[in-house]
Amino acid sequence: MITNHSILFGKYRVHSTSVGNSDEAIIFVHGNSQTSESWNLQMSSSELNSKYQLISFDLPGHGQSDWFKGDDTSLYDLKEMAKVIEAVIDFYQPEKYILVGL
Image 1: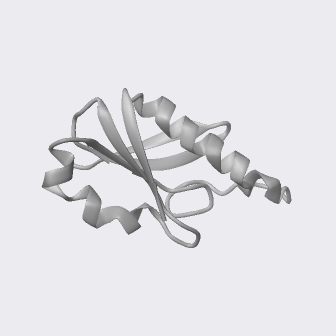
Image 2: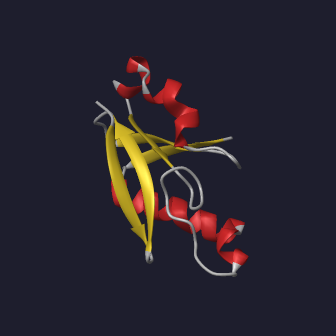
């Protein structure tokens, strides 16, 4: 069963979903103008979720995650997005993980 979570990133909420129960995870990162739903096929794969914890999330400004507020667009740069991914990893705390992106 896929579970929804809200991860706090500073004062913003990042929406995530997970399925499977393993110390090893596959973390799926969507591309620009997409959402975590881009990974629905992989998230519903019984072959994958029987071996791994599968994690997908909406980057800020996408899907069900909050938008960064104000005029500072630097919050959407690659360094900040890497920090969001780090927050997701910290939330789930897998022993090992594979990061997959579009």
